[in-house]
Length: 248
Image 1 (cartoon, rainbow, N blue to C red):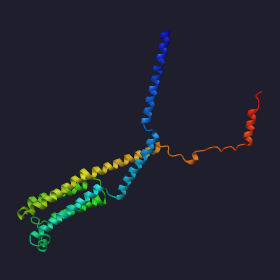
Image 2 (image 1 turned 120 degrees about the vertical axis):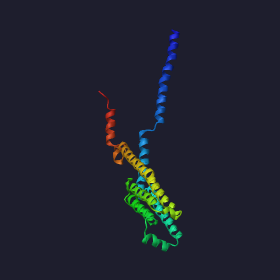
Image 3 (image 1 turned 90 degrees about the vertical axis):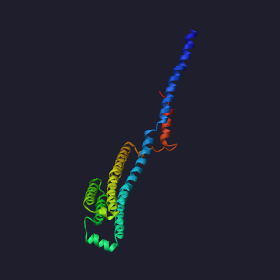
Image 4 (image 1 turned 135 degrees about the horizontal axis):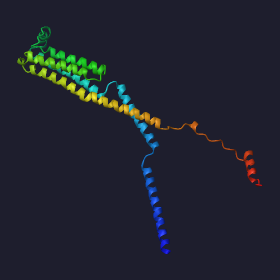
């Protein structure tokens, strides 16, 4: 009998210890996890701040990476113009060489067409990607194809290589700049803008879902408290008298 009582007394603490450990683990896991109300109170503000930042970018009218592309297109035109002016000075003066290359244009010896090719790229690309904000590669593909075909034909047919270093410099630089513009638009501008647009849509959808799940702040009209009764009123005295009556 003594052994049974001792076993029973020993088993009770063990049985009590297991539920207590389970309750402690459950309570600690609940305390470690944030509540849904805390998540909804934090996430919508962050999402709205992100959406406002995207809206601010939209108000700018043009993204930063697209602005960089337009600046590079402008640099292309100015650099080719600078090289052409240097070539005019090297040949014996701007006025006489300009009259010879523009008014007496010769496809095999003039550099004026390379300058016009840079102007053509500048006008088409700024019109398509700065003013119309095109999100497709067909405009840059058109300008690069025209530039490449024209320069290849000019190098093969014309006599530019016999006119010194500029016979190599202007066609090669014009060709390289056109392909750098194509690479920059196709691998930097369009993918980055598409990624930013996807992020904006995801943030907007998440904010809408959070607004639907969040119960919101309760208004003052949703709370109602009955008016307090005045101490010593007739109703209190009647209730007191009813409670003091003996039960028959």
